[in-house]
Length: 530
Ligand code: AHR
Image 1: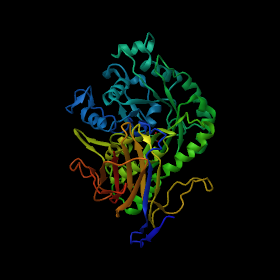
Image 2: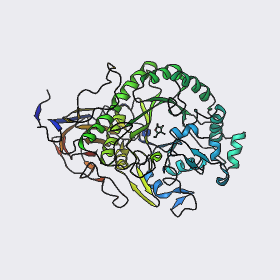
Image 3: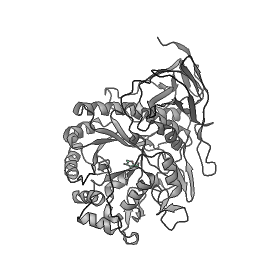
Image 4: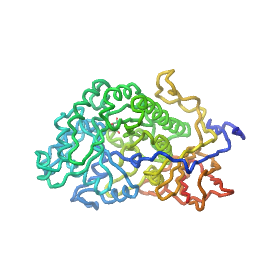
């Protein structure tokens, strides 16, 4: 039986820790499921300075670029082994007309980006530029097609334009525009948030529309589309049930969107100014991703017990108030150590659900919500969330290892309860009590046989010792890396770009085949075991 050692006194802040012996067992010879590399995916949208300024600067820019795309951003993303990139939205996708973004740039029509700040979109970054970006990054494109305001014909022709190798009106047009050979595109979204900004449809209407649009998205040559249907927001289990029942046999993936909003949608909270209670609420809310994946997967299991259909969490991350003085429509926010912890917790959750979750895309890659990169003209900074992705890339396409964790609890007495609650009585729907596990863990074995364990200590003030036992493997060598900083509120600025980063970590001991790890407070730790 687990021995509870001591319950700490409640501090003035209301924070408390229930100490217990923290123990992790990893079954190193029992892995079955592969953690798809696409779980570590990204999302780019025509929103604020994500595309324009963050990725695209144009060929005549003084900022070093390759065919208009920033070299520094491409290099940083390649270092993350970015597996895929979703584009062009988000809400923007359902008012994007792809034909406006091809051909000579000076002849492309301009439009208003009604969702994001009402600014002029000059369409200088279109299909060719996006697919060039993906080629430079060595990642797979994920295109989000317009079902909300575009036609069936338009979506059908986009697929033909990109992927058809032969004589056809769209393939000929592509060739005229300078691209002889088709591109390969696998991931294809059929509408985004069709229950909201993508057309305000009911699940039934969307199902019928999906049938029409998806029918005409053809597989040309050996290009095979992986069609992703618009899925639910948050706790909308009815949406999942309805679309999987109606069109499950026509889709390869079903999306899910869940944002971590610390306070409320009216006042989301600041990205950098927060107290411990708000930190706790942020973590508590982000952990609900586990409940969401469990519940949506349970519904999917009823209709798809073979798990053929992937659950695609193609928008997730923290959403705060915009930085003071910035355009409210641009959703620009800073990124602190808190966000790195949020990212790492979500990664551990996605890994644990990798039998169903086949892709996830954090929103958004540069200069918007939980971005991995921020830019200011020629300057670029890597955020704490970048460093969380950096640590976790070891899990890409590795075999998930079962973990059994027993650990203490962390809580804050006066934390605001989560703003959104699913209906009372919904199974597993309500948060029980105000405390969370102080440690989160995930483990995998890669193709070379190396084992990686990723650990998070959410406690902002206290280190945690974790006794780790690896069953079914002999430990010869351990190395470690840690991501932490002096304060949860620390961030990387253009003047101080290295406040939060990854350092070598050696605070562990191997004794009698067990590893005792001393996890620093508010940290993410990676152990590599050979
Ligand atoms: O990420 C910002 C917006 O959030 C996306 O455009 C939309 O899909 C979601 O509502």
